[in-house]
Image (cartoon, rainbow over all chains, first blue to last red; front, side, top):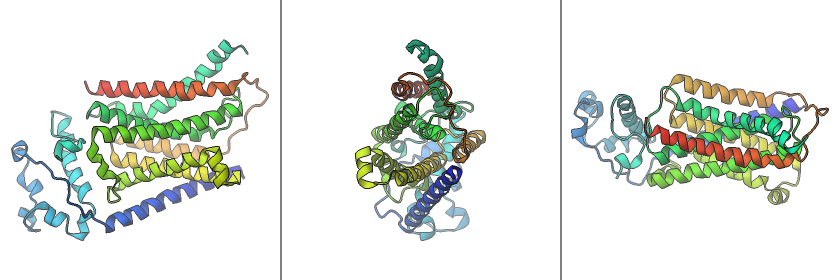
Amino acid sequence: MKRLAAWTHVLIGLSLAVLLLFFAEQYRAGNSPNEPMLPVVFEHGDHTETACTNCHHDYLDNSGSGLCYTCHKQSPEIAADMQAMFHDFCFDCHVSKRQDDDAGPQRECSGCHN
Amino acid sequence: MSSSKDIKEQVLPFCATFCLSVLAPILVVSVWPVPSAINLGWDWANLLGYLCLAICGFLFIYRSRARTFPAFSSRFFANLHRELGFIALGLLLAHVGILLLVEPLLLEYLNPTAPFHMLAGLMAFILMIMLATLSIPPIRRRMLSNYHVFRHLHAVLAVSVFILIAVHILGSGFYLNAGWKIGLLSAAGIGLLIYYSLDRKAPDRSMPRLNHSSGYSSYVSYGCTTLTVLVCLTLALVKQFL
């Protein structure tokens, strides 16, 4: 009886967590931020070792033109993941470079947004 | 048993077990490959978040009953469970508070359109406040007159909080810069829930109990937690110079 009760707690607890995450994800996917994104400071001079097309991929794949935000914020397919996408993109490079030498900001928001 | 003998033979080993158990995940994420430091406030706050998870995990091990340490009374474990539960909530508040203090832009993550792992953290935070509020006896008696209903609800919410915190930590990926760290922590979390689900032997009631053992719970909860918080601060400080 006790074993059944404990297993039930785990199963219901797990289901509740999954359900909450599912609804949160549904809400998040359907509601891209309406407010303007935080301004980002990007110094081209600090990134001369990085290939231009790493960021400006539209030069290669003809996926659009203009500001990054034009597509990344307004396209419903990618807008919900915009924040995570840009963060991962910058973090990956900064974190991997940090292992050897000093790189740009990794986690401090105010390092890029100000 | 005399008081000094009690402390030497029973309380200190229990304190050592507690400290090592809750510091284990922090030591795992701090060793090779050593993750790079951000700043003192940021690193300390995140280590306090890990400490909160570890204490939540520890709370599953004995479920407020004397089992593995029969020399302590049931009242000792009940007191310890209550004190550690509120300390875990305090650590969660410290984790959020310090991070917002050193990085106010993190307020953006309280938005419902924040990344998935941040929403998991936010929901864990809300559920943990519910969990703690419902555990306060006058509120519990007012809202849930049946104690068994409270116990089941408490257990279910606790499992959910533990899973949501785990999702938050794995999604944030702070200090999880090696596959073995992610694997070990995930296996420990799953193992802990399985252990919780298993039947365990009843306490050995023939063993002599410590006199006034319930009073020792504060040694473990407040004393040991203060020690582990200071260890986290020291580790965060050391990281700045690595």
